[in-house]
Length: 312
Image 1 (spheres, rainbow, N blue to C red):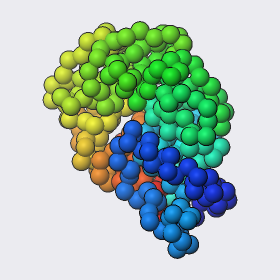
Image 2: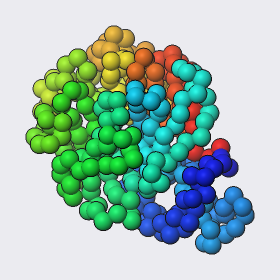
Image 3: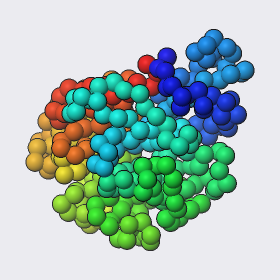
């Protein structure tokens, strides 16, 4: 069992009070990742009914590399976690820290700039807040969050940002929304099942979405989509200045040469099981959450290094 030090010990009493509530809302994020420390006994051998363990990450919904501090941030079912990078581009296993001891179920999540995070999801059960957070903003590395728009209305399961333009997939309506003013006001676009959405950093009119019918491309800011012929059937995809890449449900990682989704995609490496989250970060680094934990690649996805295990 990974020793989370003081952060883990201070949250043990909180977990005892929150665990029944947390388990009730767990269905929103799907099944919990294998390796999450939500077991029948705690690490000191006591019954979970008497002293349940810290629930750990749960499902990881989003990942980002913050340019301001060089750390990886993982938005999960049980809070946002900071994962310091060790060993530079190659990473190295480290100890994640749950920020502000908050159990907020942060669904949609993106690092929009240095120390500038956008998110959505569901509140910590201790907070007096509607069940859907709408769009929220943090300027202090997820220590605090402030509502921006659609509080109590929207549950964005994915967010993508280029400049002042924000795309968000609202799971409550199954609709892609777009904002031209950093999320303050919104317009509706296409309505269909989307697993992951990303936008061309050089042309915010071009949007990619992974769907049950395969990879889809829009050239009109999400109003309409068409299939990308010859593309792999990706579960996750990300488009940034670092390139364009994604992963299939079996963990196979693909990259698009020249960041062109209509070029012939190249098979790269492989993750451990299905990807939960996938991000193309700065300097060509890739981040992924899979069955083993949060991983990083410095070679376009050909090889991966574990940064943080769910239960190490």
